[in-house]
Image (cartoon, rainbow, N blue to C red; front, side, top):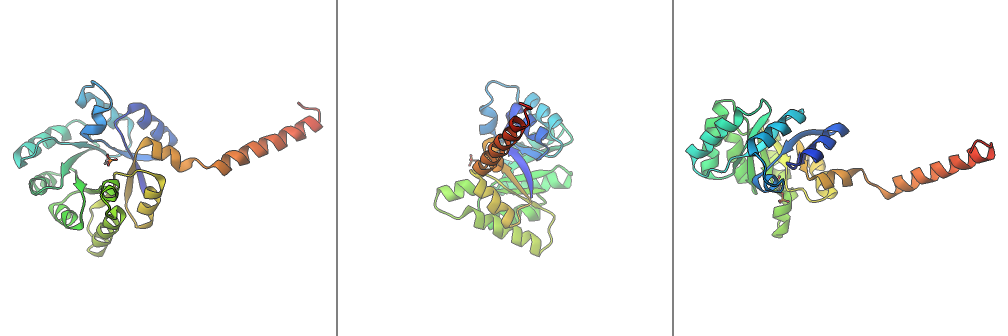
Length: 220
Ligand code: G3P
């Protein structure tokens, strides 16, 4: 499973890329708004220049024509741009227009298999089921991810699943277990994935034992 970062923060993205584990980025208007008063296009282009893979950016229009026009413009910003289109009826139509023009679409705000089914049929490159938000309302977000993965596998469809709205490492692991192609994770979750107290204790113990050896041999 590939790891994407779900953020518009340049520092966090640069760190993730330096780690060599971040294969793409997803942004949305809420994430961009957290970066303060920025030039949207410049910020996205900077992200695209740092990240070696797809960078998803959301349209704000709600009708088909506005979404398509926005998406065509956004698609010119960089080679690795993917346009996020919401999983509405208008979004499905826009996706099908854009897919025919080879513009990559990430069907976002997806909460059910039925929405994914139409998104894949319309030619979406990615579909993003929002796990945490489903869990928030007492539903099983990961079951939706699993159902979509199974459906795409069964019919051998090329659309890839991005498990989104990931809130903690367990979400990420569960996404890998059900075969999601990608999990897009907040920066904090990326850091949590590597942290383990036994690793820290182990390093400390090795260092102390080694210091004792050096002291015994008079090298300290
Ligand atoms: O990728 C979607 C994500 O940004 C939404 O996450 O935590 O706002 O539900 P959240």
